[in-house]
Every structure is written in structure tokens, then in C-alpha cells.
Image (cartoon, rainbow, N blue to C red; front, side):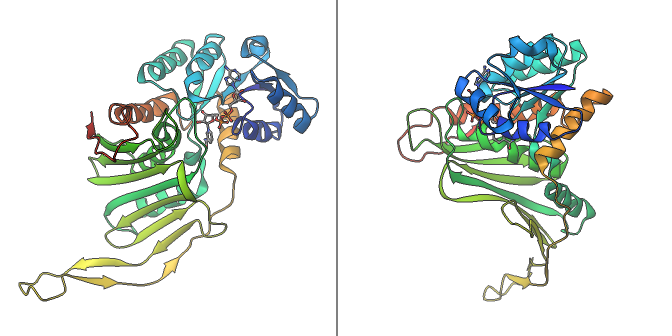
Length: 337
Ligand SMILES: NC(=O)c1ccc[n+]([C@@H]2O[C@H](COP(=O)([O-])OP(=O)(O)OC[C@H]3O[C@@H](n4cnc5c(N)ncnc54)[C@H](O)[C@@H]3O)[C@@H](O)[C@H]2O)c1
């Protein structure tokens, strides 16, 4: 099987590494930048490397689209029109209309369309979901996520479209539902284009849970954290931890009913902190292996285009609020529809 990887940048180069190691898979690297093609050949030796998808589409069985988000739709549609299965990096597209067209085209051509929601292929996220579903945490009160770093500033989208697809995908996967409302605070601090710090609040109606998402390209500390606060216990998934990615804290707070205004309003419970064993597997390897299996078997992937479209709808709901971010004072940008 031959897979074309469109975009040999930061992330596409990882797809090429992972796919090249899969048995029976050969890779064609596609990048509009000649220097990136030369780099692919330096790293991988005699790998086929071309400067446009059109040049190699006929020879491919599937395509991974790992170019900047605004270029996802045209490349994915070209691949689908040629009858090829496609794995598109997150976010699936930069508009709802494009994402809908991609999903419709995949259906019409009977082709696999998969979105690269990498964290849905992450064993630590699976473990966190297992813990939530077991009821160990009790009723979920809220979820908080932080995805912060210094960079990588993007040209064609703001920090929400760049980083929050991960958090929207993780939280909706954990809760088995999509949010019905999104509020956004966002601000651009550096450059003239896009908000680089944002806070989202999403409400999940069935579970009556709110999730708070903090994303930033402008933070001194790299943070990749999901905190799930339950009535009985709390769990923290720290993607940067080497061997304790998920910790379950047997702690909580109980309200004390008393008419005495001087009495303690709550009591605190503290207990063990447990870190469950999680089998190591590189999420991108799990994801790309699943894509190849979907191409081979014809079975729908776990994260089909429809899943990418759901997340794009949530991202688009933040646009109205995030677009007018100015260099002025921090302002509440309201509730997006
Ligand atoms: N799943 C994840 O965890 C994850 C992580 C990082 C990035 N991403 C996604 O991967 C994609 C790429 O991000 P990146 O950080 O690697 O970007 P990048 O800028 O580092 O690389 C993009 C590459 O695409 C090439 N390119 C642009 N337009 C092209 C075209 N029309 N045809 C061929 N090549 C073209 C550029 O020359 C560049 O080499 C984005 O969609 C991003 O959201 C996903």
C-alpha cells in the first residue's frame, strides 16, 4: 500500500516516520517547499518525494493531509475525488461549509475520511474515560484543561483553532456528548493576526457538566493537562508525565448543612493518590495504524469525517467572539451562538 503524506513540516514528518515503519506501507512525501523534500530525503534516504499531490495521486492508495489547516479542504477534496481514502489532520477544515463538503464528498465517493484527533488514540485518554465510566469519580462536577506553551504561532488560524480541537475532542470523547453552548474569551497579544491566548467554556447538557479550556501560545511553561473533578474523587491526566500520566486523587469536599454562620461550610476528605498502569503506545502510531486498517478493511474509522465536522462546528461557534480580538484591554467577548 502506498500512502502520500501531504506536508512534511513539524507534524507531517512524524506521520512519515510512523507510516514508513508500518509493514506493507510505502510513503510518498508531498511538499510544496523543495527544502522540505530535500530534508525528507536526507532523513529517510531514497523516499519518493514530489512537490504536488496531483503529481502522485494516481499511484496512491491513501492520503494523509498534514498541511496548514486552511489547505486541508482543497487537498482532501482532490484526494476524495480521485477515490482515495484520506486522513486529515485536526481541525478537519477551517469552516463548517468546507467540513460538510468533505463529509458529503467522502460519502458520495464511498471513501474513507478520517480526522486526526490524535488524543482519541491515546491510551492515557482511554484510561481516563474508563475511570469516569466506572463511576469511581462519582458525578462529574467539571472538567478543566490547559494546553499552554511558548509557540508555535500559526499563520492561518488562531490559538483556538490550532490547539482547542484537541481539548474539544478529548472532553467530548470522555463525556460521550458534544457541547450545546460555548463561551469564549480571547486576546491577541503578539503580531497583527490571531488571538494567541483564549479561554473557552463549554456546557454539556446531558451530564450537566461544564468544561473550561485554556489554550495559549504565549506561556512560559509547557502544560498539557486535563483535570476531571468528580463528587467522590478527582483525576488528572498530565500528558507530560513520564510514568504517571493519570493520577486519581481520593479527595473531595462535602457541604455541611448548618444554620450556624460561624460553622465550617464544608468538610474535606483526603486519601490515596493512585496512578494506574497504562500500556505505552505512541498515539500517532495507533492512529495511523488504524487509518491503514480502515483503508484495508473498508471499515469506518473510529474518528470519521463526521467527528471532525462536530468539532469544527464547536470551533466555528467561537469565531464570532474570537475574530475581533484586538490589542486593547482584555474584554469579555460574549457567548458565541
Ligand atoms: N494531531 C496533532 O497532535 C498535531 C500536532 C501538530 C500539528 N498538527 C496539524 O498538522 C498540520 C500541519 O501542521 P505543522 O505544524 O506540521 O505545519 P508546518 O507549517 O510545520 O508544515 C506544513 C508543511 O506543509 C507544506 N505545505 C503547505 N501547503 C502545501 C500544499 N498545498 N501542498 C503541499 N505541501 C504544502 C509546507 O511547505 C510545510 O512544509 C496542521 O493541520 C496542524 O493542525 C496536528
